[in-house]
Picture (tube, one colour):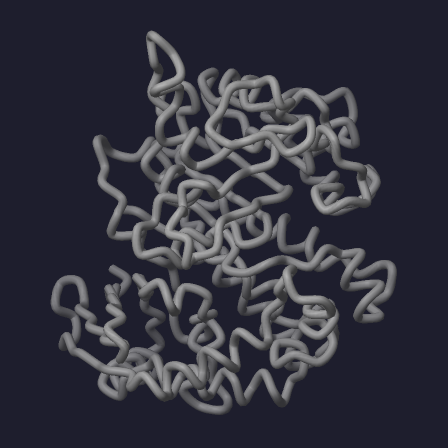
Length: 414
């Protein structure tokens, strides 16, 4: 049995950590990060991440930030480890490593540290945490289950929502295309072709390219597909969320092909109505004389991938009621979502000078999709991240930088 540690955090100015090992395989412990140290390392991390609200931030993150430069990234990784890896926990991990055992660390971060890429922590200059442990996140404490998560059935279809066309927004606009012009030769299109060949692609598409930029994939069609039965949900597109200081995590929204006339809790944007976590949680409550709960309208499958900018942003709220929470409350066993905004392949090519053949976003999508087909998706995702770490060390470039591959994290609820 894999040794598993639960690591929980609480923010009270200083950050408090405590951990325990399942089956008492090692000693429990506690740790504290003084507020001054916490602020310093988080300021350094924040400066390295893309911020769509700040002009030039994406280019800086891809070319000059700490996650784009090997030396600065190594320094940041060591600073993160000094802050967040208590000595006694590091000793236990070292003992397991020297015994050839890779444990599973299940982390429940406090909201202020929700964007920390735990995988990158460097307890030693030559070692990263992802090399000696598999990592996942515990769901927010606000998640209260009414029932057990759905079992994963790999024979059921994969509901793929791939870069849907948002009404009222051009392909080159703020809510435009994420993946670019559909091309059957791209990595994601080849994955789609495999699902179509085995009859597992939902909605069905005449060609792989037809699965992208659909104009009919709104909340109603999504509900029909999920109610028909699904093994997984793969969403690639846009997510927008309120700022953490607003306290409105339930306003986090997926942008489907929903016209403004469809009912929902979000106000329309031009001719489009976003599909929010509040919709998923409440369904038609308060809007229908015979209201249906969100879990009935959109029964969430066992495994969900939300590949979009800050799709895991509800973990930054004290009362997390965003998309990850809604998916877990709706039946998901695990949700892979992103801790910060993601650069597109076009951005990596144009802003950072990567070759036109570089497709780090598409590669990330395919890796997560592959992991979600694996019996142990957490371990499979970790294995892929270890390959990316090796590539970053041996051939550092905009395409191998952790600004993209370290963004996704898996929230595992069981």
